[in-house]
Amino acid sequence: MIEIKNISKSFRSVCVLKAINATFYDGEIHGLVGENGAGKSTLMKILSGVYIPDSGIVEIDGEPVAFSTPVDAYNRGIRIVHQELSLIKSLSIAENVFIHKYRNGSFTKIVDRKKLEQEAKQMLREWDIDIDPTEKVCNVSMAVRQLVEIARELSTSGRIIILDEPTSSLTQNEIQHLFRIVRLLKQKNYIVIFISHRLNEVIDLVDRITVLKDGEVMATKATNDLDSSQICNLIAGKDICDLYPKMESTISDVALEVKNLCGEGVNNISFKVRWGEIFGVAGLMGAGRSELIRTIFGANEQYSGEVYLEGRAIRVSHPQEAIDARLGFLTESRADEGIFPDLTVSENMIMINIGKVVERLFLSAAKIRAKTESAVKRLRIVSFDPYRQLISQLSGGNQQKVILGRLLGSNPRILLLDEPTRGVDIGNKTEIHKIMGQFVKDGGAVVMVSSEIDELLGISDRLLVLHEGNYAGEFERKDFNKEAILRCMMGVTKTA
Image (cartoon, rainbow, N blue to C red; front, side, top):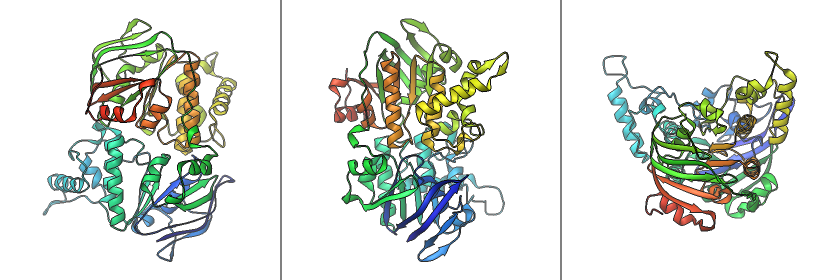
């Protein structure tokens, strides 16, 4: 087992962890939950050797250990799959899976790629992951990358697997597939630490739950002794029914119309979005959800079809043209496409709105400060100093809110949001839903892609379902039926 005893950690006089005690047992799936900034990631970085604690000790099988580098933790069998993936996108899946132990040829030091690919294929098959190992990572979806990253860690001799938001890019089928893998790890006597903001998944999967809040352990209990409402209250003082606030708005004329749109992963899709409406897009991995809104925004090439904005045909071949048409886009790939990691929170906030903070050809510090402070206050972004702190030092949820603040600062009329609450805690997720609700209440329109069916059902006014790049169904809010929608997502049925 692993024991964490009185672990504390501070950054710049800010106490992030306060005398944490926790125990993780062999053959156990242990859930770790809490809001962004509660200390989950910091605790796991201490356990994996990224950070050195200010005080306290870690024991493995009763023996005190001191990790000064991630290699030390790796050598003791600790493996971590981060929320923001660390795959090398220019390499193949096989190369990424075995990046830590390339196979050389019998008589040369040249990598035996055929052998590498065969071993990768065998290993992926062992975990029932149906992926071509020769495909480059840059050509596969976020969901596939997530499975590849997990497979890479499983290919080593580790005994402790830390999964940080592993389902954030997966759809329901992939989630169930992952759960089968995790349960198999439990049977093989691994220690699995499962970090997630999705409480229904935690309750379905884990044996015990530890709740962190403001750097302290609020409770550690068997899953059977807690329900969703109790966990919500421990995390954020909210009841489960408050997770998806639906703000009433006036739905009026058609804002955006898509006719017979074809592009990469998208085949002949048509739909209409009205002012005052949150229009949800559902589907499994490979259904074409992200590809659909990326094509509308000009991030992916449009092969054919028409897009109309307030009845006027537009042809967007570049994202800047979409921004000029007052379309706003939030990418699902926050680390790769959403943030400038080496810039500050404030610099990230103004990046696409620089023209609004220029005065006489120079950047105006006063205007930058005004816009930054307004967004930080409105979106409740937690940063010790937005003018000095790098955005990469924020939690995932706070990074997402910075991107959303930047997006809203461009004064869009229609928002195209791809997984807007991915990796965001319960409290911040509710805040983002309220921001979306206020946006449409003020007369805007939102198209939202989400892997969480409950989120789509909770805040959407209408719902489009895609299956393998094709139209599979459309549902009005009054007709929402979870089972019927899931059947459409899996291609079992199709609505008119």
